[in-house]
Image 1 (cartoon, rainbow, N blue to C red):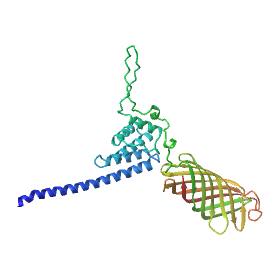
Image 2 (spheres, rainbow, N blue to C red; image 1 turned 60 degrees about the vertical axis):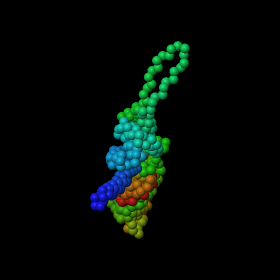
Image 3 (spheres, rainbow, N blue to C red; image 1 turned 90 degrees about the vertical axis):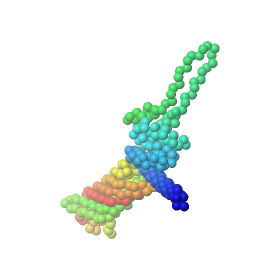
Image 4 (tube, helix red, strand yellow; image 1 turned 135 degrees about the vertical axis):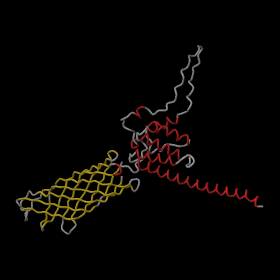
Length: 354
């Protein structure tokens, strides 16, 4: 009886081991696909849109390395090959290799298609060239004639290269924003609106006829900017800003002017606003109203995307202004002509729509 049980036990143990191995393999497949999809999302949704093409390529290479043929669905591997081709061609890294990746994607999934939001003329040309690979050339049409027909020239092989103008070094790339079906998600394009309240300090002072007055105070600042992109990452906006002292005495500097905001990679930015300014300040019981003066506000900061078009961020701002007094008749400035020089700084918290 014992001799008969041994083969059965071996079979049962073998089946159990196979089941456990299969379950482990399935778990590894799911992990590999999840990891590959995560890298793909970051590469195309963040790095490529931020023009960090090399970083996007590295992430997609890692995704493909993790997504071996026995670990991932062919459709996912096809999508990864397609996106890698888009990055290599759109980012001008390696156009020939990008076209090869398009061809590999089509072999893996005959229904794979370009993302129309990322398609450009250059990318479309490479895609069509990859699609034409291996297609037989059409037989030439021979006109009937009583005379013996001349030998037909052999048909030309289908082109498998990207048009020369698309690969010429130094040529301006047909970037995604130039395509008719552009996506503006997480890009500094189109309409722009920013509100940035902050906390800081403001000081001002004037001297005339040997007399001087000054005042400084901690306080807050606010500003609104509304405009649009003149090109990607370059914003031109109308900017209204103010700095104000935080106590019961009146102390406020207001400015208005055109603002230029330039975005750097990863949504760092620099801004400058030449402005017409007005200062109103109460010093030692004397109320000073100034004439329209000139100054400006400069800023630098960092923002983070919290949606397709919304960013939150922080910034450091510096305000400068020179304003002539209207002509005080009370002490200590009894003579007209005094000029108040004001300096303010603030840490702002930005809310931006773009």
